[in-house]
Length: 579
Image (cartoon, rainbow, N blue to C red):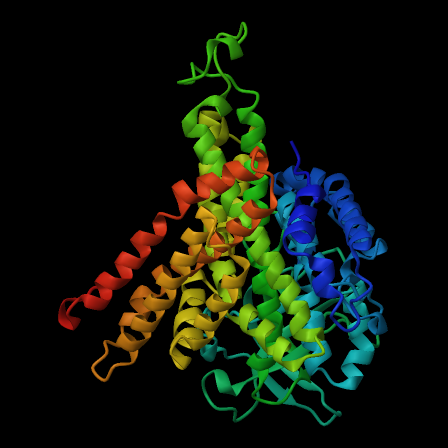
C-alpha cells in the first residue's frame, strides 16, 4: 500500500487544537490565510502526494539513480512528477508574492513536506532544500544575485544544493579546504575543491542546479570564521557549462531515489552570498529551515511505517488474543493481530509520537511565521526563542523515533516485514540517515544544552516552560501530571546549569548528559502536546484517546530514567565519571 495523507487529522491539530487561523490573523501579510483556504490547500496537497508522488516510491528504491560519465538519471517517473510539482505551484507555497511565490504560511509548507517525505523520501530530497536556499539568498544575497536566481528558486525552475561536507570535514566545518579566488570581473570568484554527500548535486529534474558552497578566501583565518558562502550554478547565465562535475554517486543503505554526489569544482565561477568570513551565518539560515524539515521527515516516515503496520494488523490473523470475548470472534480460527495487547501497545505508542510530534512541529511552524511577520517585536522575540530551543529537540528526538519506531512497526509483520514485498523495510532504511544529516543528533543535543541553555543559566528554557502552563488545567489529571513534569524539568535545568558552571566543574559533564537532557525536554514537550490534544478530543474517541493513554503509561515514564541518569552523572566524582 502507498502512503495516504489524512488532511482531517492534520486539520484537527491545526484548527481545533492550535487555532492556527487565529494566530495567523495577527501576522502581517498572512491574515488572509483563513481556515477554508488552509483546508483547501491541505486537501489538494493530500491528493497530489497520494496520486502523483507516493506511487513512485517503491520503483525509486528498486531502480535507484544511475550515474554515467558525470550524468545522473533519476528513477522512472521522477522527472515527470517534479514537473507536475512545479506546474502546480507547490515550490512557491511559502515564498513571497513579490518573488513569484504564493505568500502562504510556512506551516502549510511544513505539512506538505511531511507528507511528501512519508510518501517518497527519495523524491522529496530534490525539492527539500528549495525554501532554505530561497531564505538564504533572500536575506544575504546581492541585488544582482537575487534578480537572477531568486525567482528560479521560488518557482522550482532551478533546484539547489548545500555544499558543506568534504572528505576531511564532516561535522567539523572548520576543516573545509575548498578555495575561492577573486577575479578581476566584478564580484566573480573561482571556486576549487571537492564536496561529498551532496544531495541532488547532479540530476535530470531541472536544467540548472544552484550550488551553495562553503569555501575559503585567500588569507582567510583557519577555522569556521574563515569560511565564506558562494552561489555556483551548474549553468552560467550566458548558457555555458560551469566548472562543476559529479564524480560519482554513493551506494547507500537507503534513499536510492536521491543521488548523493561527490562534486568537484574546477575553478568554477561563483558569486558571494553575504560578507566575507560570514559564510556560516548565511548558511545557517538554510540549515535551520532544513532541520525543521528533517524533524517533519521523521514524523512523516514514522506515520508511513505506522500506516503499513496498522493495515497489516487489521488483516492478518494469528493465534488467540487474550481477553477477547468469544462472541466477537465469529467463525474465525484466529484473531487479528490488532487484537493482541503487544501489537496494540506497539501501534499506539508510535501514534503517540506521531501526533504529539505533529502538534509541536506545527506550533513551531506557526511561531516561525510569527518570528518573521508579527508586528510586535516582543512577540517576535518570544516566537524566535521557541524556534531556537525546540528545533534541535524536534530534529533529534523525532528522527531517532522514526528509525526506532519504524523498526517496531516492522515487528508487526514478523518475518514478512523483513522481505521487500511489504515495503516496511525500505522505510527503516530510508529513515536512518535523518539521524545523521543536517547536524547529527548528538550535535543537536550539544547545541541545545551548551549553546542555548547553559549560556543564560537556563532562563530562556525556563521562560518557555512557564509560558506553557496557562494552557494546562490543574483540575485534569493529565494536565496536573504535565504541570508537575514541567516543574521537574525547570528545577533540573537550574541545578544542571549550576553544576556545569561551578568553579570546579567537570568540562565533560554537559557533553556527557546532553543526549539525556534533550530527550527529557522532548518528553516533557510531548506531554504538553498530548494534554492539549486530549482536552480537545472526545473522551470516547479512540483515534486520539488510545495514543494519549499509551503516552502516559508507556512513553512518559521514560522521563524518570532520563532525569535519574543526569542526576547520577552530576553526582559522580570527577575522577570516576564516565561518559
